[in-house]
Structures are given as C-alpha cells and as structure tokens.
Amino acid sequence: MNRERYSLIESFMLSCMQDSAHDREHVYRVLYSALEIASEEADADYDVLVAACLLHDIGRAEQLRDPSLCHAQVGAEKAYRFLTEKGFGEVFAKHVSDCILTHRFRKSSLPQSIEAKILFDADKLDAAGAVGIARTLVYKGTVGEPLYTLRSDGTISDGAQDEQPSFFQEYKRKLEKVYDGFYTQKGAQLAEQRRAAAELFYNSLYEEVSTSRSFGAAELEKRIR
Image (cartoon, rainbow, N blue to C red; front, top):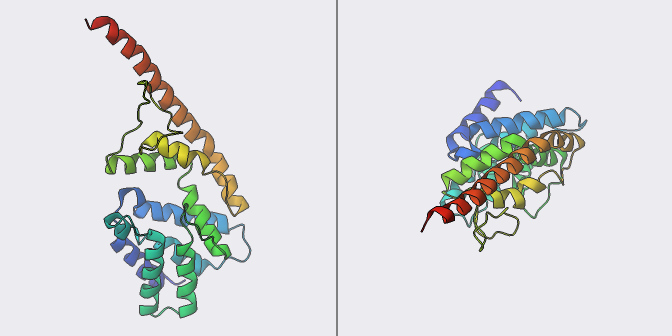
C-alpha cells in the first residue's frame, strides 16, 4: 500500500473515532499487533490487513448513539462504501469489509480469511492484560458504571454471577476468558504473555476493597449506637 492510500484511509478513520475506549490509539495498537501476528503468517495480504485494521471500529459512533446497532456491521458497510467511492477495487473493498464484519468478540459470524483471523486476534489482544484492564475502566467510567456491586448480604460481589454491569462483572464475563479462542498461534502466545498482569490487578483490587469493607463495616457497627 502506498503512502497516499494509507493516509487516505487513516484520515477517514480519524474522522470517525469518538469513543475514548476505542480511540485512535486503540486502532494503532490493533494495527501494530496485527502486523506482528502477520509476520508469522506466510499468506497474509498486508494491504487488506492494514486497511481492515484502520477501519475496524469506524461504526462505533453509530452503535453509541443506537445500542441496537452492531458496530461491526455498520463499520463493514461504511468501509465498503468509502473504499469503492475512493477508487479501491470492489474485490479489495469486499475483503476489507468482510474482515471488519467478523472482528467482534461477541459476534456469531466467524472470520474466514487469514486477514480476518489476524484482525480478530489483534483486536482481542487489546482486551488482554494491563491494556484490557485500563480500557475497560475507561469505558466503565464513561458510561457511569461502578467498579463492583454488592451481594444481598452486603459483601462485595466478585462479578461472576452479576446481572448488573460493573468492572468486576466485565472481568468475569469477558476479560478473564479472553485468552481462549485465538485463531493464530502468535496471537495466543502474545495474549498469554499478558494474562498475569490482568489477573494480578483484578485479584489485588478485589482483595483490597473486600478486606476494607469487611473490617470497616464491622468497626462502624461498634461505633454507631
């Protein structure tokens, strides 16, 4: 891909990014991780991969405005329109669009091409480790969701059985499980290298808030008459 085409796609991506948890730096991290993964895959089309990585979250703004929409579906359609309108070939645009359509972690349709699998893994990798923890906390703060919720007995829930959204719930529902299901060996290897940092943070945070609440609540009962 020449510099002019890269800049054209990058500029369109930058005009679409509004979500602080899925910002331009998320896009670049996904791109760089994808390139690292692709370096061990013999048949990857780098032009398709770069374009798909740059454009994979351009449907986020529409999903934020209307949560019933799927940003992967919206983004795939936007990317196809943009690329064909800017003179990219239809086959290229369709390939990029298909990669974007299947990149979502909770999406039922599965990536088929090696480029789609690399994008899926690179995007998933950004939900792993310390970066995944940080991005989740940023998002939870943006939408006003708490770190944790309380059980009926007043103790802090670890999030595993929660229905109400919180950071602990998201950790148990997604972040703890993100290390399984990678399509590429390199993606799985990179994710595994990040696992310990996320586990340490969650366990430390849960221990700190639980211990403090347990002791403090008992002490408060002694002081209130």
